[in-house]
Amino acid sequence: MSGQRTASGERTGSLGAAGIGVTVAGVLVNGLAYLVPVLAARRLDPADLSALATALGLVAIVSVPGLGLQLAVAVHHARHGSSDTRRLTAVTAAACAGSLLLATPVLATALDLPVEVPALLAVTTAAIVLSSRFLGELQGGQRFLRLASGMAVLALGRYGGVIVGLLFGAGLTGALTVGAVTAALAPPALARLARAPRAPSGAPPLTVAQVVAGCGATLAMLVVSYADLLLARQLLPAADAGAYAVGTVLSKGALWAPQVAAVLALPRLARGDGRSRTVALLVTGTCGVVLVLASTLAGGLAFRLAGGPDYAHLGRYAPLFAAVGALYAVTFVLLNDRLAAGARRAAAPLWVGTAGLVVVTATVRPRTVPGLLLVALGTAVVTTLAMALTARRLTPRRASPPGDGGR
Image (cartoon, rainbow, N blue to C red; front, side, top):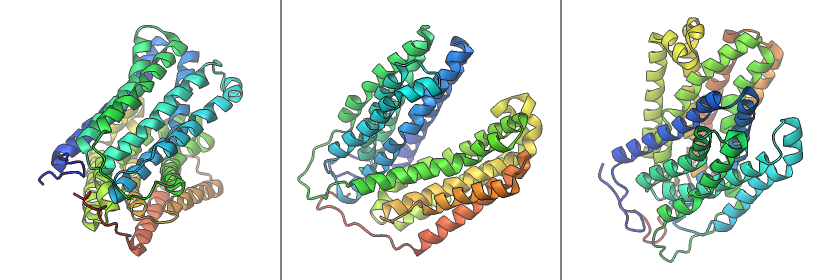
């Protein structure tokens, strides 16, 4: 497929090159995120290791609105062209960072964190959210190669400083301090990367409701896909809970492996391109089938790679874990399609699915890995079908190109 030009005149490049670029950037992001705890386990004592893991988890949770902001900006930009999103971005970043600062006494006491850590995490969180605006503009403008570069820049800022701090023996607070500094450098770098000539535009402003919808959808996707893992700690014996956690590594791999299709399709979905949804679903579904088949043939190896030789005997469950992730990957594409079409309560099936999972597990109270896994798989099947049915009933609200700012 030949390249196209954005409203600024920049060529988007072929989708093949864009897909490779975004995929490589995604691998870098996940690789750096994985490297931090691996390195920390060798550089920190157990107490500081646990504190660092908790700190990174807090950043991941509190920066979820940044993912929603990126989604909202991308859809709005693709549908209407460039508009001023600085104020909403600043408010979102301030709210996320401020929540950490306000919670400092609770976090320091309840989680046994050094009192300065929440402030450092607030800096990192603000940087992530501010960067999300520029990533959304690049995605919505279909400047995918620059989007890939932006993802890499943010990953290096978010994790690179922490890695450097650990390598130089800076300890917990030192590593987080270096990480906060490098993270703060990401937004200005991304601003330069996303810069483009702005033509006069009568585009409507991005609204709070659009950002809230994006945040709600992102949060719903994370909650429904992690709910079974959280329930495993409550329902299963410690050894089985650990085994279930290893299995969810396969689920998350099947969930995130094909996400490049959703990233590339989103701007076209926002412009009412139904063919893009078909292609994204086909690519995502095919990837899921391949991963399930691969885990069927090499389940023991998959568990060995994910958790070590002690878990290889659980290989017979690998296809079921992979199927859960594959189904939610399809759900994610459908969710993006509903958001791009301006659907209200786009994430409702996901919240219903989560509630159903909690109710069923509370009633049945499975005490084994396969017992909980079957409930999780059933939830994934029902949630995906519900999302597909609501997507079929939805009539996409097609947006015409903004003036001459179309492709």
